[in-house]
Image (tube, rainbow, N blue to C red):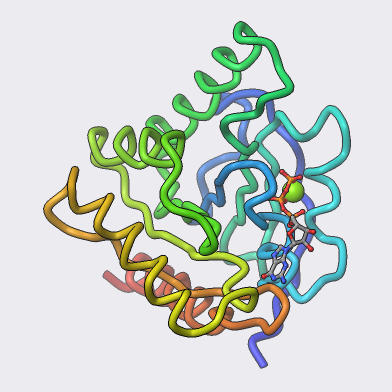
Length: 201
Ligand code: GTP
Ligand code: MG
């Protein structure tokens, strides 16, 4: 159920180049190796949909996918790349920050966190930046199949304690596994609900 028709739209170098803001859009972001491509493929039920975004040259671009001609899935470059120079990284962060703060049709950003690790500084910094700018986001815990139930609950608790040290409220959270498809229906329902609210306010 919940079949998605997904088409690659294009890759863009800045917010000003992105397609017209005629559809609601949802962005996905996280550190490299967090499981972003796997999650996107799982949501779209494609083996290699997010391949585009891993093609050299496109990893540092804003990648658009059209879903059912109803919404855009936006695959953002991972933050905190160790491999690029400081200058390049700053340029790149500016591109992401401009996109996130300027894009009017962006409804919500999915911030991916690896459920096996405590909150990393770079994740905390990104989340703080989103919060300070009043930008709506939710958290997606990835790779949860790799943990026992108790370990997962403990890790999520630890991450949430770190977040609560900075913020009064926790954002909405999704517990996912690209392997078992856990969380797929929940994420798609969340998106559908927002889309319906926009269509019939
Ligand atoms: P980059 O594009 O290289 O920055 O990484 P990414 O964030 O797109 O992560 P990717 O989806 O390539 O996943 C990284 C590794 O984690 C791969 O070996 C995946 O197979 C594995 N992985 C991702 N999600 C899951 C999951 O839900 N369960 C398990 N068991 N492995 C996962
Ligand atoms: Mg990837």
